[in-house]
Image (cartoon, rainbow, N blue to C red; front, side, top):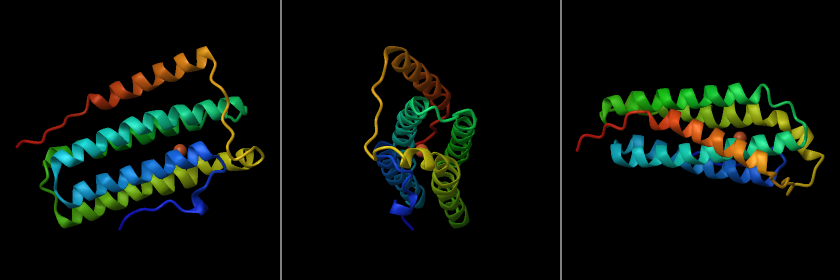
Length: 170
Ligand SMILES: [Fe+2]
């Protein structure tokens, strides 16, 4: 079953909500590729999801810094979240498209938990009380140091994920 963004998942900020909508669509692409046993489509879907995830994490950090939200719990949770995605990707690629029906259902369930339950509901919802006090379109302007920080952080995260194997054989 496809995942869908609903108003209940809103964290009270247009940029973060829009990122989440896009990420949910990308999780659906990953799940679809798993169900279709299409290793190449899966590799592409993972790459797109990972790239957007880096941008999204930088956006969240940029917003929370500007509103003095304590990001100390968010950063390790983001790292853990990326590790879980890496683990899933390794597990999937190791089987090269030969996934049983049970495995397909397991991975779909995992991805729903990962995106909706863990990331949005448990983690990002903590920002909602603070974000709701601001304009829904709130977006702080970047300053140079922050741009460099976000770019470095994004490059660092990208390196971690690009080390993962992509082993489609045909
Ligand atoms: Fe998020």
